[in-house]
Image (cartoon, rainbow, N blue to C red; front, side):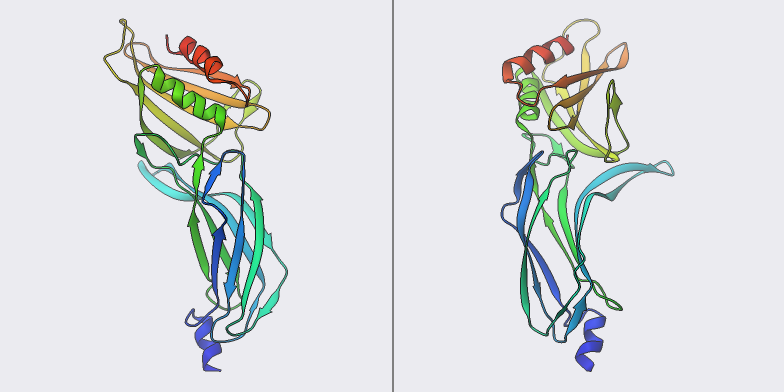
Length: 248
């Protein structure tokens, strides 16, 4: 009886641990692994298991910039079961990454981007056990080509962050409620009277196309926006040519 009471307040309760097969994943890819559950000191009924794909995004609240968790995808295993004291179970899982999952592996600069799996057990009248597992999200090949192209054009990446909101252009619109910005600055002093001071790249990844929104901050003409749509299999030469036209 005492063990059951203690388990309800989280002492000696069931534990959950999500173990990805690899924490290194790629945009548009999938995550596989197992959800391992271990019973505590008392029998408990598990009503369901929830697995969430999460990121952290910035937003303005009362003129103050705050970071909040943002759910990109939600997966539920809703088959209830009774977990005996000390019992161990392992459930395999395989999930597709949301196409707008931010990348977290960048070559340089201040990286504020985070992506993680959050797992919880739903137990009635008890504190729900939780687990967090951070992922290393690598860019898709065409996105990596754009990042290399910026470096080859003489720009250094200074920041990567995620913000609340939606992006749209001709024939496309983001759906996740967040977007990522990769911020670049020219390595030297720039050329011309209206030189570029800063470039921000945002990608909307789709399996059949990758949409790129470019924000250019110039010395005298302010901010300007350009939109491009790239093939997922575009090579480095194609990407360099497109970027060269934008960065003039």
